[in-house]
Image 1 (cartoon, rainbow over the protein chains, first blue to last red):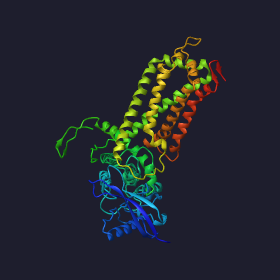
Image 2: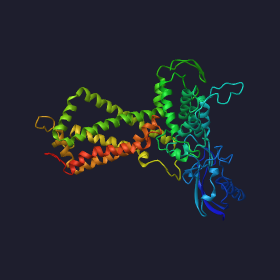
Image 3: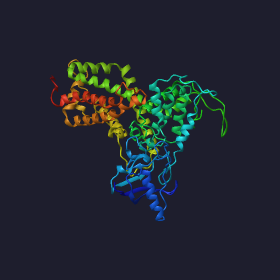
Image 4: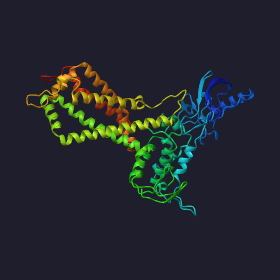
Length: 261
Length: 246
């Protein structure tokens, strides 16, 4: 296949304090075998050769499992291809001469650090608020010591596939993080091992989510459509139900506003 | 929760009182969701009862006026229900406005390009349709409860000296302008419920693969729209007249 010449409109922003703007670049000679991130690498080489500052963007494993890559591509998180991260999006899906808009995740809770990099620390705070599970230390437990139905294990694994990339927040018209938080809760709460702290964990993580300044869910499900790991809306229903139980009916110890217990 | 000592950055704090958990729940994101779902559901249930009441127009003047008289004479029930509905409506609107403000603040900067993929227009315009429905309800009360819009049709009596709600209804909807206002109001309500009724099971966490939670909203909205518009449409086309039905 022939190489692509593309016009890119990229968000450039020096740092968190300064205002940013969309800047137009031409990138030439992009192989259709390149991933989207490799295309940006090629552009950055061309920019560096011209003496311009390369575009900052997040990336790490480049095999779709770490959750570092992001990017709003033509108005869709990760480019909008089903269950695909930006690093796994390949340039063969674009045509020669295409115009592509590339923006960072937009949410009050995810401030831009530089160019296309945003600060996703609030996710870490939500995870930290979730605390630990109760498990016996010492010798390794026997296999099948705790019986787990296949369906529960599958459902838990589906939720655990969340890589915390933040596409759900980026896609949500309200900047809500509920799909992420619900996935993290569901992956523990669909297993026996997650039960002892279930009520406290639900309350603590939701409290931490609210404190981080994420918006509220209005059941549009743009998050579900954007999720590169195909997390389903069911996890949010589970969280909504558990939160009512935790807040109104549990005898759990108090959760403070920072999510710690 | 009960007072409990714990060290904070500001020193020892002992001022945690009863029921703070309830306030915290109501102010939380999911608490607000639950409040919206429950108040919305109760208002919807009223709308269903109200609709069934009006379907009695097809039963003729006597049936409808008997029903109207029955409602009006039960003041011990009527006023608490009215007060309850008003409280539900106010809570629903205030919490919604708070959520709109919070959600706008959570996404202050717009994308240069953004493509909504699965969200419906009805869902994204909930605040607008909600306020429009509120305005419609205000008009409806001024029209049929206070009687300012068509005073000539208000407070006439039927043969049994009861308030003639049947005539008021017929005179009201023989006017195409009035019919148009109610048609528009019901379209707005249907749009609002199309998303709202699909949301309440999800918001309360009652989603289950055996029940079609997401299709419930449009289904309910359509049913309510047809049920509400049937009697006025029958009046407009001359099926229900001053001298009888059919």
